Length: 173
Ligand SMILES: [Zn+2]
Image (cartoon, rainbow, N blue to C red; front, side, top):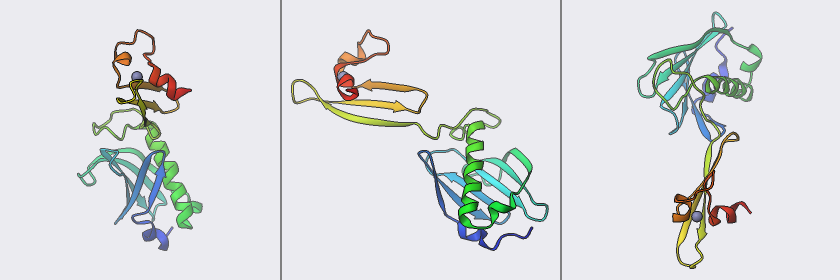
């Protein structure tokens, strides 16, 4: 197929995946995807329009096209090249595939592991019973682990498993 005319229009488009804003950067032979401020790797999609195939390469942020191939010679789905909305779906499904296989926050080559796209720590401020001190309660929930912590001394010395305190309990209730 021919290089789609609309291809340049997706340059600098942002696709939000989980908590990561993924930015598309169109280059000569394809495009990069950056996980702005979250990933040490970039993903390079080498598009071979003549052969209707594409490669997915894991590159190191700031080091151009140096990297290793996660996929080679995948067929380009023509139906997803028609509009920029379709194309963004193509990018999104590819990023989800990459993120399930590679830890993009880690720059070591050939290191397997998934990228956590969804973990987000939520902070709460809880007033202590003296009415003056404020403690910080943190909750990390990625759908698999659900961890709570608090900056108060009672949490630090808590003998319960998992550790807890009255501030955490007050947020949960
Ligand atoms: Zn506490």
